[in-house]
Image (tube, rainbow, N blue to C red; front, side):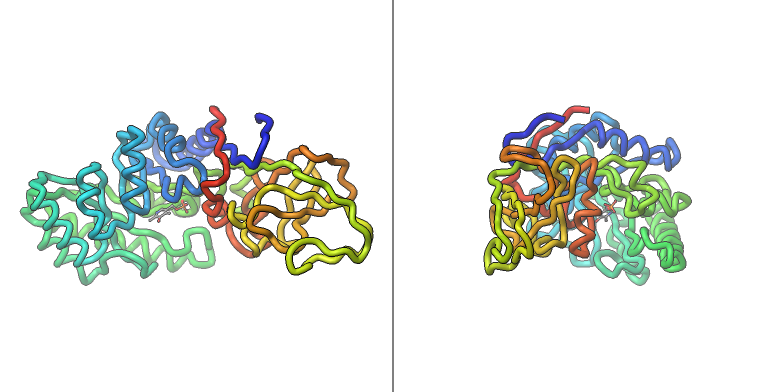
Length: 369
Ligand SMILES: *Cc1c(COP(=O)(O)O)cnc(C)c1O
């Protein structure tokens, strides 16, 4: 990969393509594929990822909020975009930008129908979300008649899909619960389809769902983290390639004596003479304070350099004693040779959190695959 001159998040579109092909190989050729690109495509680059997924033939894209979808439309993305978490304040923008809302509650459904009517829509595509146990968003079984009543003989909108979301797809100890969710989804979607008089496509699986419950792929699957190179499973991870690599360079090296301290609040005290390196990224770039004080490390010339002391807003200090390195040398925070899952684990969090935390201050560099 290219040399960097400052803190850079390199985004490898070849790795994205590899991951897409791997995930596709786990499902039937006829099953549609929705690429989840919410939260700046898991902290990478939403437009570059969406363009690549469009080229690769993804059937759908999904974002969490309407304004993320609008950014994709501004960039010329033509693929259908599901908005997972729309709010009434976004309904005008959703229709104006040809975004497709997930309707998940009685209030949201009724209000969206009113806006669709006021805007003279015909067969506007919407998606009905069922709550099957996550208890986050979605209609319950008891709402099915209400939903059918609202939608029946309604010319303004057309149901493009029915969907639900698993609560613990990566945790096989929860298999009975997940199977219960799948059954409940099947039942609700069958009842609603019968009442509507047509059968919208159905989808339930996220990345770990694809890997653990392929029998529940229905007509479409939704993947986010797997596309970005993480499978929530140490046996799957080697099959995938991390898309994002966060790299930085050594700004300054210090040689300190025993009993000196490093950083704010003097949180690190050296027990022996040490060599430290200051790196130009901090909590404002997404490396939270939970990674400080030895909880995480970076790789310099292939060797581990733990973060010492507290993470500052714009900098971290790492211990490079015993590493032959100089000012200007590269440091890998996470990426191909050092997974974000591993970096996150030291601070008891998950790949999703560290990836999406990388702030917009960090330069993005797209590597064409
Ligand atoms: C974020 C999200 C996904 C993607 O999940 P991954 O575990 O990243 O594959 C799928 N479906 C819904 C409803 C989501 O919110």
